[in-house]
Amino acid sequence: MTHTPSPDTQWPRWEVFKQDAPGKPHQAIGSVHAGDPEHALHTARNVFVRRPAAVSLWAVRWADLLTATPEELTTTPAVLDTPGESGSYHVGIKRTSKRSMTFVDLVGTVQAHGPGDALRLAREQHPDALTWLVFPESAVVRTDDDPGTVESWFAPAVDKTYKQQQAYGVIGRHVGELKRAGRMPRQVNEEPHVGDHKVYDHPHDTVKP
Image (cartoon, rainbow, N blue to C red; front, side):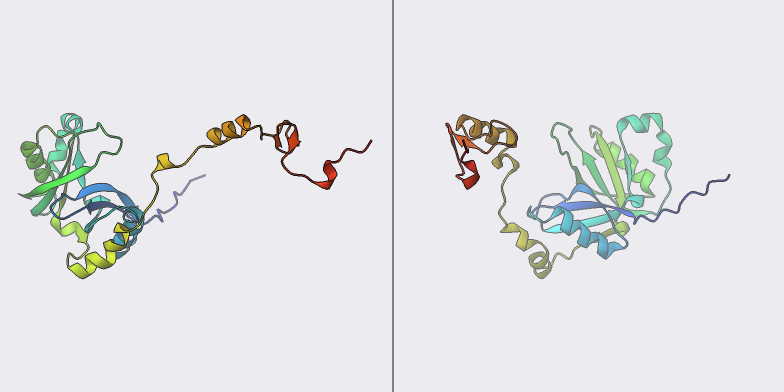
């Protein structure tokens, strides 16, 4: 019996780049699946800009990215020959892996004959990077940088307040407090007590002789 693979019905994957403030680099912060560029930007806003501040979002289809680590270039040097369009390419690098969420920073552009050539130039300019990432300028879809767009897309998130994760308690701590206060049930089907007295005084609590 011949098995026919199911068609891939998932929307294309888009890498999201966020700029926190003017003058700071755009950072690759994650990805979304979307059907078109506008959908990708709106989804990226909903996923990544609900709380933190931002002034700009970019989205690039995953198929238009070329990435490599030093180890990958050693084992597969042919990646530097990857063909594509000539033009301006954005360069991103990952500098460290010391923090739990390490982003790729966009550090500039290069004029290249294709993505492989752009990756080669990125390695030459940033030889100590842990990862290089390149993509053509023509592949970028971005939010407008006019004040009106920045206000409507990002300003509302600046004023939102929220608790850090460590501000919330844990179940174990509250159980311990109840035990020390003598308010934990002695049995599964028993009501909480304070000393020898039940917390709740119900008519059925009276024990008949």
